[in-house]
Amino acid sequence: WVEQTQTAHPTGTDQVPWFPQVSADAENIRAMLNWNIDHGNANRVATALTNDQNRISLLFNYWLTQNQLIEAVQWINRVLGSKQNITWQYHSGLLNMGSWLCIKQGDFAQAEIFCRQSLEIERAQGNLQQIAQGLLMLAVTVSKRDPDQAWGHYDEAIQLARDIQHDDLLSALLTNMGELARLTGDYPRARALYEESISIKQANDIEYGRMGYCYVWANLGFVLLREGNLAR
Image (cartoon, rainbow, N blue to C red; front, side, top):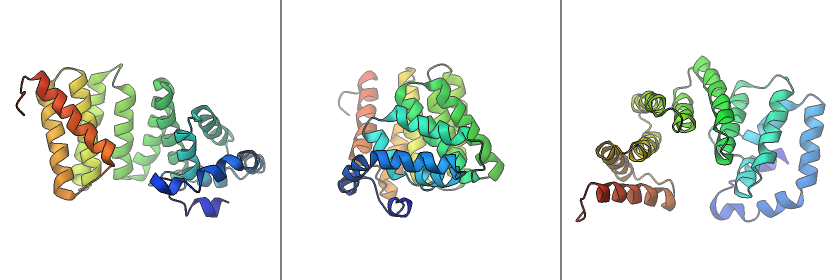
C-alpha cells in the first residue's frame, strides 16, 4: 500500500481515483499504521505519512482536503511520541505537516513548536531550501502575536531563496510577506512585495494554481484601492 501511495499524485483530478479508495480502506489503514508503530516500524509509518520532504503525501492531502485534521495530528503525535528512531528527513517532514495542520486548526502555539523543531533539524543538516520554507511557516505562525518577529523570519527566508535562486519559493515568500504588510497597514511595502512576486511569476512562468495567482492580484488591487489608485 505504501509503495502504491508513493507513486500517487494526490492533486487536482488525480485525486479522483485515490480518495474513495482511502475512504473505503480507512479502518485497514488505521490498523496498518497502529501495527507498524506498535512493532517498532515508526520510520515506515513516517515514510507513508510524508512520502518525502518535497511532496505532499496522499494521506496528508486526504486528511487536509477531507477536513480530518484532528486525526492527522494525532497520527503525527503518535509517531513522534513512539520515541523510535526516525530518519531525519521524515522526522522534519512530520513536524512540517503537523505545523501546517495546526495552523489550519488555529492552534498557532503548537504549530510554532512543530516549526521550531523542524527548523532545528534542517539547520543542522544545512538544507537551505527547507530552512527557507520552514522560516516561511514560522513567520505565519507568529505573525499575529509578534509581527516584528515574523518580519525577521521572512527577511532571512527571502535572502536564502535569493541565494539558492529558487524563484518559485521566492515568489511565495514575497506574497506572504506582502500579506503581512497589507494586514499591518503598510500599503506601500505590500504593493512593492506583491508586484515583485507577480513579476517573478511572469518572468519564470510560475504557477501555484489559478487561485493562488488570483489571490496575489486581488490583494494588490485591494492595496491600490486603499492608496487611492482607482485607475490602476
